[in-house]
Image (cartoon, rainbow, N blue to C red):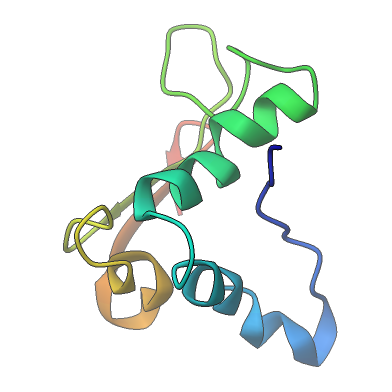
Length: 93
């Protein structure tokens, strides 16, 4: 069974968006969590190779941060501390 990462919390709940990673890390390896937000989600949407990957011709946003989320998930769940750059549609934001 495939489980994908959800990004549908809006309004005041948006601040809790990354809590899903923290909760799921209790039962899943970090690599599986990252795949759930990238390649697994792309597959579910029928967009394998188009999103969820860094490849020529794909639509990809890129997060650049401190730390290795495969070893320490807070590299992703604490963006205030760890996120250094976001590249969206080929532009740094």
